[in-house]
Image (cartoon, rainbow, N blue to C red; front, side, top):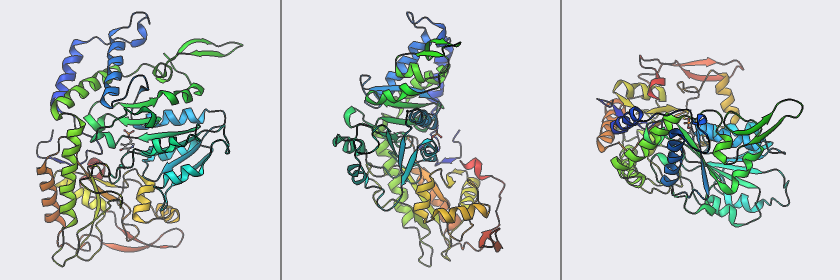
Length: 476
Ligand SMILES: *Cc1c(COP(=O)(O)O)cnc(C)c1O
C-alpha cells in the first residue's frame, strides 16, 4: 500500500502490516465466532474465550495486573472517554471537571456534562500540584466527585506530559473523591506504558488500537479497580449487561457483576477483538515491542526537527516555525513524542496556508496532516488566539478542516508524525519536498490576498480559498 507514498501521518493512524492482515485472515478462516451471549455462563463458547484472552493480552501489553485493572472494549478512544463522562454525569450530584489545555477535542467535550468545568490553559497550566494542594475534598462539596483529564502525549505537537501526576495528586490523601483520566491514545502509538504501580496509576485510560497497529478499528478503556465503583450509578443498560429486569409496576434491574460485563452494551466486536490479539503478537514479533518503536521513532523525529529548524531561505530567514513545547526536548522520550508540528514561511516572512502545504505534499505523494488538529485549547494557546478572536474568524467563515488564511497569521499547523514502520528515507523525502517546494519562495506568488469586510463590519484579510485537485480531507 505504500508503493511510491511517503506516509508521515502515523498520529492520524498507523498502517497495518501485511503479516497482521495475513495472521488475522488465517485465524478468521479457522475459528467459528458465535454470538458470545449464545453460550451458557457455565460453559463459555470460543468467542468468550478469545475475548477474555485479548483482555489479558491488553493488560500484559501495559504491565497492568488483572487484580488491579479491568479492560472494557469500545469503538475508539472517544467512546472510552464518553463512557467515563456518562458514568460521572450519572452520579447523584454530577461532577466537576478539570482538563489540561493539551486535551484532544473528545476530552474537551466532556465539559458539557459537568456541573462546573475549568480548562488549565494559562501560563500555570502545568502547575497541577499547586492546584491539587489548594483543593480539599472534605471542605469542598464532598459529595460531588471531581475528574481531572489530560493526555499523556499531545496529539498536536507530540509533547509528552508527566505521568507522575496521578501519584502526586494521590499522595496527599485529602482527595478521596477526585479521579484522573489519562488519554494515552497518542502516547502508546509509539511508547510503552507501565502500569505496574497501580497505586500511582491513573483511574481511567483511553486508547484506540488502530493508532498502534493500524488495525483493528477498536478502542479500550482501562479502569483501575479502585475507581470502578463510579460505573455502578450508570443509568443506561443494554443487552448482555443485566441478570434480571422487571418492566411493569416495579421497574427494577439487576446488573451483572464485573465491569466489562456491566458496561459493554450489546454484542461486542468479536472479530475486531480477534484481530487485536493477532495485532499484539505480530507487532511484538515485527518490531520487538513498543520500547524499540519508541527509541526508533524518537530518533527519527529528532532528525527531522534538527533539519527543519535549520532550514533557511537564501536571504537568511527561517523556513519553518516549529511548535515545540518549552518543556520538551526532541530526543528525550519522556518529554517529546515522534511528532513535529510547524508552519511554513516564505522569503517575505509571510506564512503559507496549511491547506496549500498539505495539497502540495499530497501532489508529491506525501501524507501529512494539516489544520486545527483536533486540539482546540492547545492550538489557541500556541498560536496566540483568544476566544473572542476565534469566534470572529468563525463568523468570517472559517471552518474546521479548511484553509486558514483568515487573519494574516496561522490558525492551523502542519503535522508530521512517525510510527513503527517509518524509516530515515521518509525524513529525507520530506526534507527534499520542503526544499524543492518552499525554500526561496515568497508566499505572495501563490496567494491572492483580498481585503474583505465581514458581517460585523470588521476588516479581515482573507485569502481566496485555493482548491487544488486533491482535497485536504484526503491528506488526513
Ligand atoms: C486520536 C486521538 C484521540 C481520539 O481517537 P479516536 O480514535 O478518534 O476516538 C484522542 N486523544 C488523542 C491524544 C488522540 O491522539
